[in-house]
Structure formats: C-alpha cells, structure tokens
Image (cartoon, rainbow, N blue to C red; front, side, top):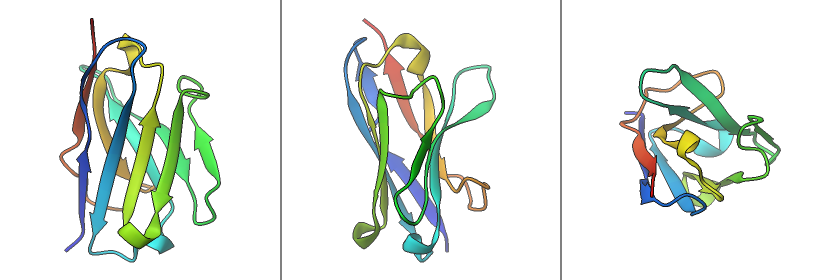
Length: 114
C-alpha cells in the first residue's frame, strides 16, 4: 500500500524557517522523481519544487533562492527546507511525483504570520 506522510509544518513568523518531511512507503522510493506542491486557501494546488533520481532540482520562481528540496533514499524521505518565509507561503504542503502518480497524503499546514 502506497502512502505519503507529510510532516513538519506549523506556525512561523515572517522571515522564519521550517523543514518539511515526506515519508514514503510502499514504493521503491529511489526510483521516483519527487516533488513538493502547495495549496493556499481558495486556490489550486501548485508545484513548488522537483528533484529527480540524480538530485537535480527545479523550483517555482516564487520560492527560488529561499526553498531547497532534497531527498534521502536510504530513509525513503523527501525534504523541503524553507527559509525567509512570508505570508504568501501560507498553504498546505503535499508531496508526490511530478506527474502526480501516487495517492495524495494528508499534507502539512504551514502558516506564516506575526
């Protein structure tokens, strides 16, 4: 049974940092390119960052230079380091593949507010 479990979200002040994790089970994780998505209230779910088998990464313009996606294949875990957070980063964050081929997890809420 394939499962993605996101964690690490919370309430943070503007300018702060958070590190999200996505634990994958039921798949051979190292064989999958992975991605982070986010969905703000009333908006569509948007792609934030991707990482392929070799560790090559891409980022949405809105997070470039502030967010870093990484993976630990030995732990079947995907990460998103988020720095210099602002209110526009407030959203529920999800992981999946870039083609959205896996069941969605529950996501983790990130709220940036003073």
